[in-house]
Image (cartoon, rainbow, N blue to C red):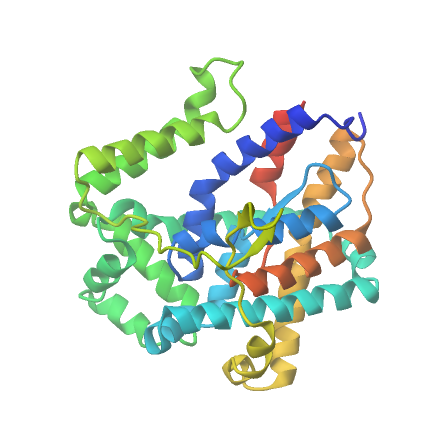
Length: 361
């Protein structure tokens, strides 16, 4: 099949579909990182634009994914840091880590890591994807089943002696603590919020089964747009009392980039990249420069496995060749731009990439 011919109208329509279907993911993954959901929308554009300029794939989309969100929060001990220093400082910490991951990605590309990554056994890649899927499910359960999300779940779970004992070792075994909360959530349905659990269940079922009853001429991702719109309408009309995205703060009208003498302005708030390097206590968070380098390099390497899996799939199914070195550099550039706008590290997104290719062919 190969690369599709350039078609401005079709490509524009594909972009609109991708942007619309990405909204729920962008909000959810921002909350998974540990900061407000609106930040996912606010910071998504520039890294994706940088990715588009550097990648060799016509279909692959990038952004904060379940993998990058979970890894960033875990590596930075995000929950504890945000509680101690506040969300704004945590955003700066995440941004500084994105910059470190970007530098590490480019370094891996220069030493030929991309070619080495192609030798990873397929069962390992498959298991990695399944593990990340399980992690996403675990992170979604609190906001899905409890009216006030993670905070409500944790406060109720800590009333159980076993969970409280596991919580004492949270720093050493964060996965065990998260799992104990999930077990509590699933084994105490009487504690669920009726509205939140119903919205979670109906929305999930609708997205999974929509292809059976929606007209075939509708573009891919329509089910996501529909369920998000319907849930939002319900939230407004029924005065939903559970956790919501909330009001999005206004951006500085003078921030961002302007074109045509200010007639066109892209309101993107930029962080001081130099300050991210000199003022943010990222090294202190890891204990040393060596540990930061190891962590950022491992993050970049694991991150690249997602890109490799997506690119390999397009090569097999659509006949589109790819360069490991180029995609590794694209990952580094996109992570660098993500740092400049206060985003978590980004990577190739399987679901958004599949929407992209489906909306073209």
